[in-house]
Image (cartoon, rainbow, N blue to C red; front, side, top):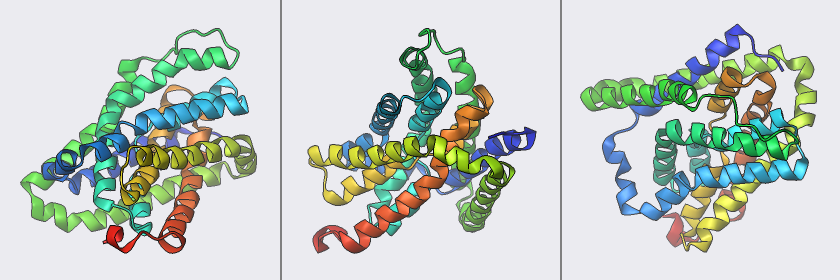
Length: 296
């Protein structure tokens, strides 16, 4: 799989565009859920950065991945929730308000936590995959700068516009989302088309790791909240939030700091999570519906 100058330019631009759209739909008051149900929000947001990296490391140990692919899986596990998770929660009849807060908070936390997780796992990965155990040769500050530039700044701009010019934000929110989703489909489609001859080999190479990682995200993201006595509807919501990642950020970090092969897990995960998320939404909404008192 190869990323040329066009893709390397499009990925951060796409990410910034999507994050600006998220900011346009957010207000400070949206985060009041943190005060109302702090345990649910914190388990879904901060717990997300614990569950998915640990699940990633379990996958690496089970499958014996080489260093580059292992690092790619860790990068996927260190990313925040993706905005797709909110849509899947809507289909699954989850707690969409909770989903939006978890996605937003985990995204705001990722400029600090994502570089920290990736750099912290560097030595551990190198040792466990047969290397020397040397520190990861990537600057935490450089990675932090990139994540702030493509995540925090666009969200901040969007929230500022929403606060100062709410009528304008509401007017452009829907067409902007349509544009950003269309741009996302274009970029992913362009990357797949360019690498179409290698795509089957890509799936065979990392498909098992991606599927296992995603399944662990769904399972741990569901049962850990249940063990904490979080209600069924919110446990399902957290499960989806944990398992659905911002893979565009994963690909951006991999390509900018490590290389094209490291981006493989994020690229394949970006396709698989739509299928898996839709399947889970159908199962939970149609075959395992919530009791009437919970689904209200």
